[in-house]
Amino acid sequence: MNLDVPIADLLAIMLGAARTGAWLMICPPFNSRLIPSTVKALLSVGLTLPLAPYLRGTLPSLETSDIIFSAALQVFVGASLGFITALLFAALQAAGDLLDLFGGFTLAMGYDPLSQNQSSVFGKFYNLVAVTLLFVTEGHQMVLRGFLESFKTVPLDATFALNTFSEVLLKGIGDMFVAAIQIAGPLVAVLFLTDVAFGLLNRVAPALNAFQLGFPAKIFLVLLLSGLAITALPGVVGKLVERAVSAVLQLTGG
Image (cartoon, rainbow, N blue to C red; front, side, top):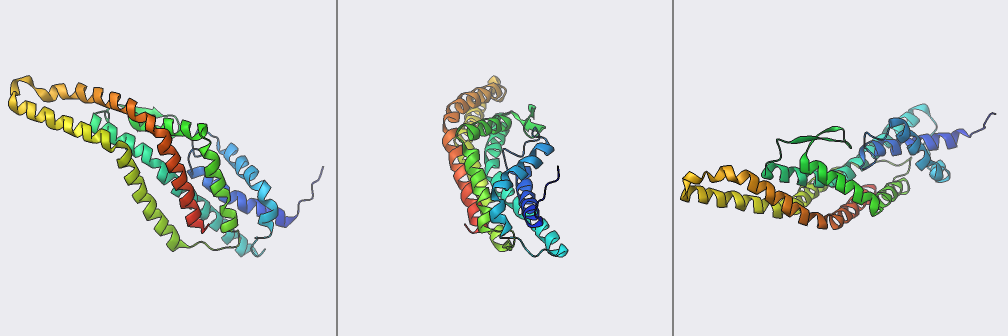
């Protein structure tokens, strides 16, 4: 059976799928290597299909050079939007890495099934909890909706403001470090005070070898305090989703 698909509709879907595919490759939680590339490619087309009637009216010129330039631009736009979102969610991974650094877990590296790379213990733990909470709270739908809004604010025939991207990128990097410090800051402060206390104890009674006792004490404090701090992660993930969506809308002028 032969299907007669108009060239304009086909080009609109392919250009939209190029932006969506680039976004899926970078944006969490869709960037997981556990999702095959074939599935991501089909998902990018499936997410673009409902927007085909709107995208058809925003097509650039049908000249070959314009189509190639537009395809490259869509990949860049999708990758930029995905990177901004991934940058904010990296705050949880960074917070876990800070806890591993100050708690003495940096020597115990584990395998992260999401990124399929070596990761620290609490960095991997915070990442897994964040992804779980993202799906439980339906935050992934908000992130996806924020991205799909970019087709209205930045249509296929529009240009992309690099100065706005640089401003949002710098702000996103700052927000990532601030969020990581806010998440891990109280626990890091407690671990630092623990080191100070054992240092003073070592000066008062050198024969006790207080620093040797400090490692199990810090591990106990990290496990205890992280169990208490995990109750705040749902609110943190919700705020990160709101920041990511607002950053995407700001980048696209929405």
